[in-house]
Length: 310
Image (tube, rainbow, N blue to C red; front, side, top):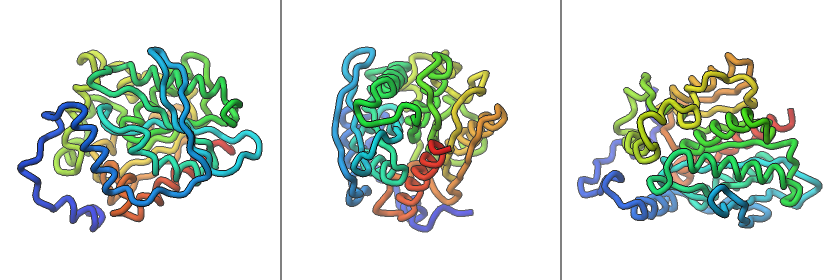
């Protein structure tokens, strides 16, 4: 198996020797570059009925949340709380706006995209605590935003997938909110993963800076063992919600995503696992390059719809 031909063309391009590594950038510069890069490959925004911004209370102040409504409300609709990717240091509701539009349209859910705090200014577990607080508030106040708290899902991509795993663990152990489904898109589940995909794809496949992301996010080496940082290290997977886990064949995070799906399944949790064998990490954001990007996100939305209807 080889990477998708369009991706192979990009991977074969000579590296820009004058480019500044993200490790050497100031956080605001790194974020601006990320926003610009994703904007250049995003394309036209998918149509959607309505988008609005709200704020919800968090542990250290208000948390911004963007709501996506796929159609005029006919009663309370299912709710998907989404946490964006970006290596814990970058990304925002804007970089994942198109993805959330597609998820809302394909799932029929009201999608709530959470603007959690980024590292290195905010270290673990700040972002996870914000994501959990936002999810709990949205569940407890679901009717005020037109959502049905009995049909609640969480999801995210990459670092956001890590947040989703952690939120389900927190919700289970706290006795709520009741999460009916989880969507995990190439999730980071182990901060010290050592497996075949890490060894094969950590260099040259657009995720070379993963060790820097981890170091920037965690307070110390001890956090690696914390299940809220490394969900794959959780001792007990029972009682977690059914899941759709998506990975990419040439992603260093592939095997830890598959291992997480396997641990869920072994604990009796219903899991659908899908690997896009010829893709790389983050391919769902490459909308102007790959028609498969929108198709994969739409498939995620369909999985959420089926999971919440079950």
